[in-house]
Length: 322
Image 1 (cartoon, rainbow, N blue to C red):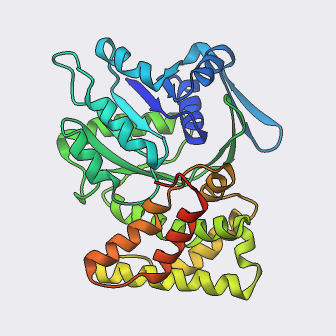
Image 2: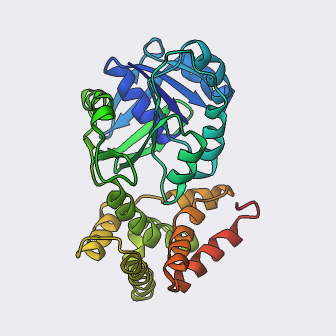
């Protein structure tokens, strides 16, 4: 079994490093040639629990740039591709993969998408109709601190499933179970889910309430709970979003508001990914998070003015926002 990791950010280094360390055959593909070179020379360092560190020897995995992936695949295709790029880069990655000529007789590759937000799976399936397409939702906490180092900030669960079907296809399930077993062996907590869409919508709701407000106010997650004014706007975003879910027939747990507050407390010192993007001056995932909720509202014939406002405010912070 050969696993390709596309994207060498925080999740890419964490998953790639732990899979390689546990004995899986892994190739890690980065956007930067400089990062690929450093990975080849120094390996991956995973920090956890203070001074505890795991070293992944560079001999245990291969690395290269995303541009080199296609040439490699034409002679040595992988079995699984875990796409861990940002939303804004994922469609381009899939268009690149669609141009690869697989060797005759090679089985359908499996693409696993770890992106935040909603709406991307349909587009990616249209680009790669000959691939098995899976969505993944993870609560693993990770922060890349250099090209070769990642902080494992907290263990979580990882749900994997086929979006839009509500079941695991028997003919594909055994292949997917092989991936789940590899992840378990690497120390993760994966679940092959029949309910991946609800997991996607659950994470979307949490991200839609937390991420844009931390980015606008430039505060860590826990400081959202620091004043009644902040809590009031959080609650407005939450209530509007669950009203959109109701209009779309999307199920959610009754205690989701309490779960969101719990996430803020559990990650109180964390900087959200959207705030990181704003501080770095790079495009955010706002269009895939709150923007996707606005799109869902329009299709259902309801309004989502608070989600629309925060989307426009975040877009206005970045000149190159897409």
